[in-house]
Length: 293
Ligand SMILES: C[S@@+](CC[C@H](N)C(=O)[O-])C[C@H]1O[C@@H](n2cnc3c(N)ncnc32)[C@H](O)[C@@H]1O
Image (tube, rainbow, N blue to C red; front, side, top):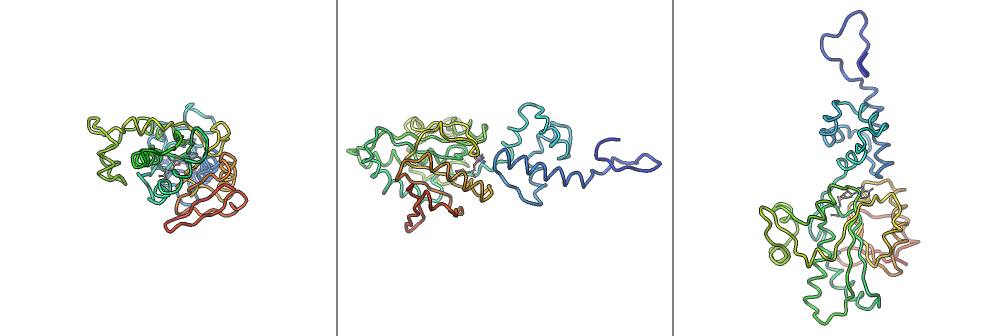
């Protein structure tokens, strides 16, 4: 009998057997457990439709519509890149330029002037879960603007490291070419004219902005020690996908990568409990900043 078909006494079914709803429900739970173990992303109940639509191409290639078959293939890790492709397809890469405004305003008005006095030869900034690069490149544009406005500034060299779990989104970040739709999200006409050049139907970010940024694959569930220490971390709009326990673990480990007094921006909808051991909350009119103790 084909796996998952209902047993029919006496006669062959006239049409293809209905999927075994029970085994699909179990497979959905197993899939959720896999995804949380592998990426931290928690799905919750009733998101089968989301999983199936995001994974429709992967399911097609496996020649099935059933999560049960997908889970078995994930267990066997066959084909070899299946786990990576599934995680890639399940991540939400929504992002925009200068997202939420205030972190970039604080960067220009407070943090960059502070960095002038660090005495270090380089200021290091981490865009954790950087998606297609808009956050890292917005930071770099803010630095370019600051330097243009303060030609005598003693700002050290600025190095921006973008990391993400998704190899395909990182490839887009590295390419630094964007379509009109992406460019229309958060970028003023002035910045568009100043920081981009034509590249066929797309626009390419100028080298001046790109040069400060590098990108690498990193799962926030794994170790960050090889990244080194940072003066400023952006970790925004990613912790929402994780459990409270995972969020706290990630924040504790991010704190270990920050110099004393370094700053952290979280997303607007990501208040975190139990951070007080590592961070002091500083409130500003348009948002908050976490300072490493
Ligand atoms: C909604 S985007 C946020 C992008 C950007 N930080 C912003 O605020 O615009 C979330 C990003 O988190 C990444 N992500 C999800 N789980 C991750 C994990 N375990 N480790 C690293 N990145 C992860 C996704 O690939 C996605 O690019």
